[in-house]
Length: 390
Ligand SMILES: Nc1nc2c(ncn2[C@@H]2O[C@H](COP(=O)(O)OP(=O)(O)O)[C@@H](O)[C@H]2O)c(=O)[nH]1
Ligand SMILES: [Mg+2]
Image (tube, rainbow, N blue to C red; front, side, top):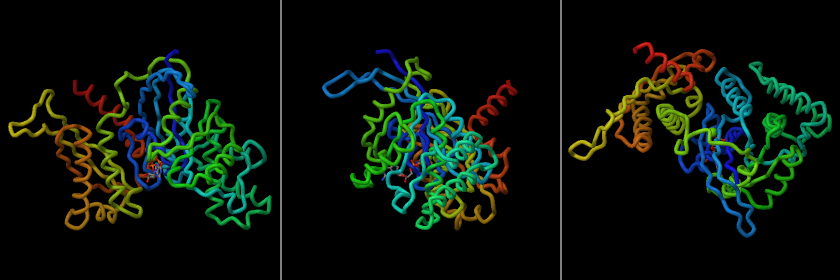
């Protein structure tokens, strides 16, 4: 059987478990995960080598493959420049892909339970609005028109009365997320996640609901957290991939540089340790990253060499800065200690981590600042600087 390869984008609403799935499939933490929405801000590539599986009794088998998984930010209504950047990352991931995993949180109650089934998006006037909006998902925040269209269609049926505002919103968000994949021509696999947290009998109505809205290539229930159903999911993914050669060398797991992973780990600790708006108003930029000299050995007393890292934590207001620093620096210390432990595990060296908190007013609304945060952009800048020095 010929080797297969392709880009497979993981998309869905915030908190559906996209990053958990990426990490579970790779067997390693590439993407940070928290219970807070909008944890993931950029596309993250994870490269998975899938060995040949021979045909066996009752099993179809599949050829060997390289699957480039692309984790993306959750599909949500853009409010700030940062949100728009995140949604652009989703669009980019949907453009260059061979297959898409549309991941849905199985613990979400269907709006149907409250008396409304979102209409199939392919039909009806509301559907057209949704698709038009999705196709031109631009800085104008087209999500508003989607919400509008959906509540209208529910109203037309005279069924809106029973739906609480939140239910209607949730259905609108589902519909909007779905509209982004409905216009794709590549295979879309519906992944029902978190089946560890729902009863079996609740799954069938969910599958029926979603299958009625789009003709998915496959429907696979999984638990990303408990690593259930992943084998089957991989089989289905390989089955829809085209024949082709590797995009990345066999032993490469990601295209992200370590310094970006380090920044993300620091951000994860901030998300875990701070509350309210602080996590959303925070960005982390690595200011210097000094690796041990090549060939550096353990010290005489058996300690590992040291990587010296300095990172800036940006927030939007002095009040947020005070929270991030904490009483006598306690919060910053807690963030630093937790991050350092994980970074040491990642790099396999000891780590000196210096953190600074800086206020950059309204940075989330600043296009230039948001673009500069992108690690792909940062890499270009570092390369340009090095060329200038040579
Ligand atoms: N019960 C359960 N929780 C999960 C599962 N997968 C992810 N989660 C949780 O859902 C939350 C969001 O996960 P995350 O991967 O960050 O979602 P993302 O926003 O789609 O990337 C986290 O608290 C995860 O631990 C699962 O299979 N079962
Ligand atoms: Mg995520």
